[in-house]
Image (cartoon, rainbow, N blue to C red):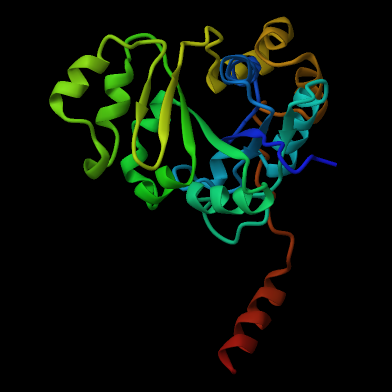
Length: 254
C-alpha cells in the first residue's frame, strides 16, 4: 500500500500501436530515464479521430502485442481504457479518466512525438488538455523547442522574442506556462515506420525481428497480421431462377 506522502510520476503514452515496435519502447525508456517516471501507461486507441477504423488492426490484436512487448518492463502498463469508447477516442477524455484513477498528489505527463504535437490545435479542447497535465514532447532532427511553442494555442503561445530564444533548444529544454510545463525529450534514434513492419512481415522475418520485440514478431507470424489476404473469387449464385422470381413477387405484394 502506498504511503500517504508518496507521489508518483505517471506518463500516458497513447497511439494506435499498430503494432507496438522498438521505437515506442525506446521512447518510453528514454522518458523514464530523463524524467524519473514511475509508470508509463500505454493506451492503444480503439477509434482515433484521425484514422478510420478500417485502416486499423483489430483492437484485441494490438492490445495483445502491447501486453507481450511490455511484459518484462515493471514500469510499463498496457491499458485497455479506450477499448470500450462509443465514439472516437479524444485525448482530453482519456486524460480525465486516468486522473480519476490517480492520487491527488501524483503528477501526470502526456508523452507524445513532436509530429503529433504539431497538430495539437486541431484536437478537442487543447487549452483544457494543457491544463490537465504536463507534456513530454519527443523531438526529432530538424525541430526545436520553438516548433513546440508555435504549435500551442494562440492564447498560450510564446511571443516572437521567446520563440527566437527557443530555436537553439533542439534536444532539451522546457516551456513553462501558468497551467503546465512542456518538456522536450531529445531525439530517440529508433525510427520505425508501420510501412517497414508490413514489408518485413511479408518478406523478411529476420528484418521483422529487428523492428519489433521477438514476442511481437512471433505473434504477428502466428496470427498472419500485416499480410495481404488473397481476394476470393466471387461464387456464382446457385439459387434457382424460379425461387428468385417468387421472392420478387412476394416482396412486391407487401
